[in-house]
Length: 368
Image (tube, rainbow, N blue to C red):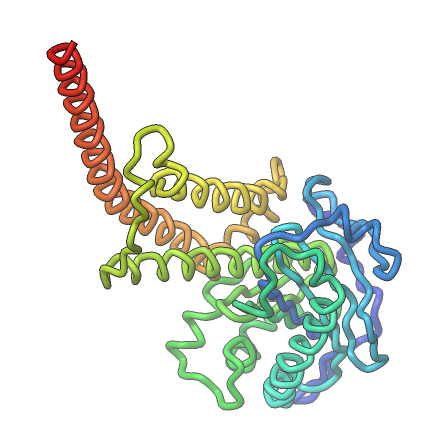
């Protein structure tokens, strides 16, 4: 439940009485990069050249499997990077905070420029971290996938409610959330602002696929949700892409030639074990996705649960998870076919060995 005292405005007024008022607030840009299979936290903590510290999270997050906060190797005063983290499952996440003070109409152009700028800046910052921790990454690779999300946070003003803001500036907000400099159609605008929520009368939160608009004094508690959603999206994209590669290999019949020892009983599984390999992959996917999903605790917090569920819905995380499960089942069926063929060959080989031994025994008995 939100506190009533949190709704009191502590900022100076940002909205004029003119037709095109000036707003102030911040643009938060979350960027996440996949840089490898796994990160060795223990070795990183022992390295004297790398300064890390534990992440301070809100009350809605569990305090295990937390990432490490790491300093940018070459921080810049104008980078606006307020957080840089490394995650144990081989990812780097960055958070940028850029103050803005202008009309929503002008902000549309500014936002597009900021997005272009920090797309490049985030790659440079993430790479500087990657170079520093590369010796401690299992299967390092910069970068396989990248995921970004933007939050447009506007300071609360006592003279306008969230409903009035949505009614008067709905077109500007919709254009902002789609990174468009022109006004969208009424149909598109209604589809975008339809996913709006608010706890008190002054609150307004609109969550979209690439960005969210936040007009809420408690916005700082929500930032962790957006960051988590962006990282979840990154990891689901990674596993989906990994399974796509395996399916492509199977569809193109690019099956590797098996060594003769793979058909040998008892020891053949060391050389060819498709079901075992699949189970290892399923475990890796399950562990990481479960770790991300279970890191948040929202029991008894209906409002924040609603917001987090909207983030999951707009980022289409459920569909990505279903896609991964479906591809795993397809790969499982195909690999079972390969496994059955190998098992049949192993049985035939055992039968041949048994018959051969019997013939040798009979021959020796006849000779004797």
